[in-house]
Length: 430
Image 1 (tube, rainbow, N blue to C red):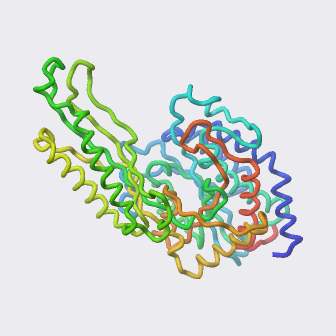
Image 2: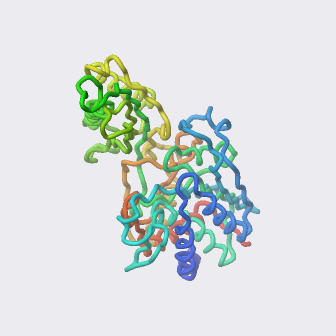
Image 3: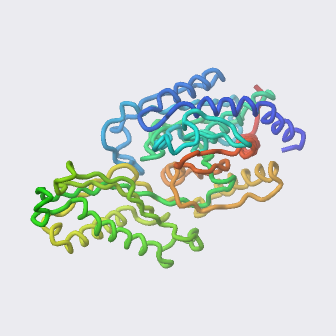
C-alpha cells in the first residue's frame, strides 16, 4: 500500500473518532446480558441498514445447529437469541473475503453498589470509557464498523465480500458464531477484536461448563447427626476438582504455547445453591463449575476425567457413595484453538497482513499472546478452515467492576483494522 493511501485511511479514522466513541457509548448503554440483547441488536441492525449493507437478522434455532461440531448444550430455549449480520458485496471480488466478528452479549454486572457509577450509564474519564461490556467487547465490535466507515468516507470499499457479524451467546456457549456458519457465512479469514491489549492471540484455551447436583437427607438441625448435609457434601467434590486442575497444569500436560504461562488451567466454582431453611439440614445442592482445557486436548476425554474425579470423591464419602451426584453438561463445551498451529499459506498471509497494519500504526512489531480464556475464534479455525485473528484494544476489569476500555487503544485498533481490510481484501471505488 502506498504511503499516500495509508495516510488517507488513518486520517479518515481520526476524523470520525469522536463519532465512534459516541456510538460506542450509546451501544454500551444497552444492557445486553443474555436474553436481553434485542435492543442492542436493533441498534446495530439500524446502523448497518443506514450504511447500505445487506442486513440479515434472525433468531437462532437450536435444532439447526445441534448436530454441528462445536455446539454447546443449552438449558431452556433460544426465543430471545438473535444474530445480526451486515454483508458488503464487492462489485469486483478481486480480493480476499473477510469476516469481521464480534459479540454483543455481556456478562451480568453483579452488585450495583460495587460499581463507582451505574454499569449501563457509560462515561469517559481520563482517556477511558467505562461501562459493562465497553471493553468486552463492544469497543471491538464498533472498531470493525468504523474501520469500514473510514474506507467509505474516502470513496473506497473492500474489493471482496465482507461479513460484519454481531453475535450473541459468546459468553456462555458460542452458539451465535456457530449459527453464522450454519447460515452460510464463510470467508478466507476472520478478525475478532477481543480486548487483549493490541496483541495477536496465538492460542486460546477451551472451556467446559457443568452443573453438579447433590441430594442430602433432610432433618431438623437439632438432629443433624441423623441427616446428610448436601451443601457440605459438595466440599470434598470441589477439592477433588481442584486436584484435577493441578494435574492438568503439570508441565507435561501443557500445549506448547502455554509452556511459560503460570497456571494456565483454571477451575472456577461460579455458582452454588442449596437448602431451603436455616434450621433444616439441606436436602439439595447444585454447584456450577467451569474448567479450561488446552488446544488439542480431547474434549470427550476431558469430560470423562471430570466425571471420574467427581465420582471417585463421591464414593469415598460415607453418604455420597449411596447417593451419587448427577452431572449436567450445559453451556460451554468449547475446544481450544491455536492459530500458531495453523501452518497454511492463508494463515501466514493473514497474519503478515495484520503484522504490517499494526507496524504502520504503532511503529513496533505485533506481539503474540496465548490467552487463558476462550473466544469465538475456534469456530472459524477448527470447523471452517478459516484462520481467525483475535486482535483488539486494551481493556481492564472485564467481567469485573468498573470495566473500562482505553480510548487511544480503540483508535489504534480501528486504524490497524482499516489498513488490514484494505490490504487483505483490496480496494475498489464506490
